Length: 165
Image 1 (tube, rainbow, N blue to C red):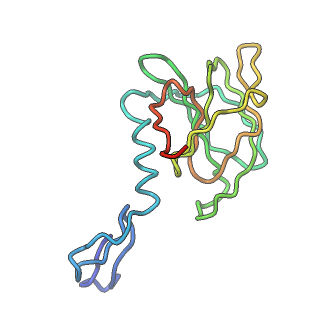
Image 2: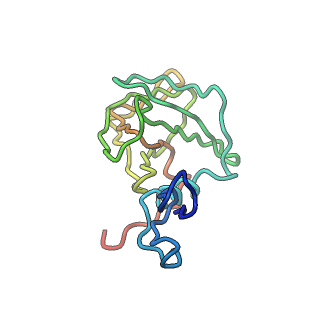
C-alpha cells in the first residue's frame, strides 16, 4: 500500500500492492495478504526462466468471447504451455467462466491439466474432452475467465496435494 498524506492529489492510503496494510500511522502493519499475492506466487512458480515464449503460437480458439492466447514451452523438454484468458472486458472480482475450445497444432500432452493461476488449482482435463489427430490436440469445454489460466502436461508441474485430500 502507498500512504499519500502530504500530496494534494491523493490524501490517504492507496491500495495497490499485494498486501493490505494499516498505513504509516501503524508502521504499515500487514492486515491481510491479498488474493493477488497468491496469484503472483502461482504464476512465478511456473513462468520463470525454464520457459520460453513461442511467437505466433499455433492455437485456434472457438469461444463466445474473445480470448487472449499465448504459448510458452519448457526449454529442456519442449513441453508446451497454452495460456489464455477472457479479454472481453476489464477484469473483475467475479469468476464467471465461458466455455472455449482450443486446438493446438503440434501439441503433445500426455496427461493434460488445466491450471487456475488465481487459486493455484490444478485439474486433470478429462480424456473425453481431448481429441487428437492430424498433428493437432483439441481441448473442448475449457473454462476461461478474466484471469490467466493455462493448459500443460502434469509432468511439467511440481504439485503438492492439499492436506486432507
